[in-house]
Image (cartoon, rainbow, N blue to C red; front, top):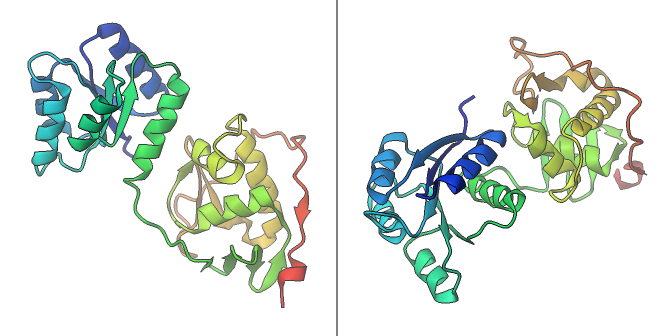
Length: 261
C-alpha cells in the first residue's frame, strides 16, 4: 500500500527538519524543496498528495508557486497548505485567492494540531462513500438511522463504539483502515488513547458477530478491513494475539431489540 506523499517547501532548515520528522513519524512519505523553482520541479516530478508551502521563498515566492501549480494540469489538484509568518487577514485572503487549501501562521505552535489539519485536508482526496442511512454486505446490515445491526436478520447488541467501528469498515469493503483512522471513527478525534485500544474493540465486536467474525480481517502492520467477498480467502489474517483480554470495560450496551419491528 503506497504512502501519502507530502512535499515540504521551506528554506529554513530547522523547520524543514522538524516538519519532515513529524510527517514521517505520522506515516507520510516526505520530499523537500528549498526554493520556489525547485518546488515546481519536484511537484511535477513526484505529484504529491499535499504540498506544505512557505510563502517567503527565494527565487519564486510561495504565492507565485501556488499560482503556477494551480495553472498546470498535472499539479492543479494537489492540496496546498501555506505556511507564513504573515498572519494578517489580508495575507490569508491572498493565499486562499491564489488557490491554497489551508493557511497556517508561523511559528507553528502545535505540531499535533498541524498534523490534524494535514489529515483533514487529505480526507478531501478520499473517494466519496455511500452515506445512506443503511448499508448491507455479506449478510451484515447496519442501519444508522435506527441504530440497528443485524446479521442474517438476527439483531446484534453493540456498544456505540462497536457500532461506529463496524459501520466504518462495512461502508468500504476491502479497504484497509489503519488503527488511527478507526480510533477517530469509533471513539472520536479528540479521544486520547493508545492505538492498540482499537484492537480491544475489534476483539469484542468479533466475539459478538460469532460465526461472521472472520468478515473483519486483520491486516498486519496496518489495521483492519471488512472482507470484500465470501470467496476472498487468500490474504485473510487471523486476529492478532498481542491484545490482552483484560482490557478496558466496554461502554454501556445499546439494546437494539426495541428498534426492530
